[in-house]
Length: 243
Image (cartoon, rainbow, N blue to C red):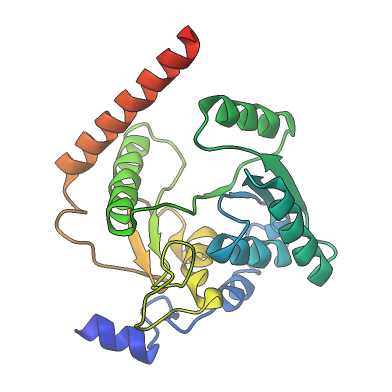
């Protein structure tokens, strides 16, 4: 109940931000970080519309080089044109990808690697079956974070909740709707804020670390989902190689 009231009132949490904070505000506050944004490269999936497009726009405005993987290349060009119209210096690279095709994913990876750029930030947007996919995202983030930590990898993985946003996933919700500028704020906060440096395997909402359900915190469920996902991928890769 307290969390709901805090959300509705837009009260800032420990990070200094809350549900009313915008992505632009968060990114601007982070623009004086130790690593200049101009040295960062971010891949933002789902950036041809909605939260992904807003995230790409804000990151690009703050000097981050943004790579947009897109199946709809025409729409991706329109998004880039819109961003560069507002910010002519925005560095945006478009690469074609179809996430339902392993061959396309491999081709995208090869094309990105050929650019010789670092990969500092990877933002994954765009899923379906909302509640189940969000639970899976959290479980995957926690398990990936656990495995990377075990390997002493200097990579952090976190899950974010944008709020209830009227996007392609949720169109008919009649309750409280988060504006697109605020919906992208948590993603930008986790991606850019020095407060999240070294933080991994966590769940963020309204630019603050947030509570997860018992199921989302179940390590055995996370490991089981990881194993099943890996088995499905290996099976598909084997089928592709045979074909």
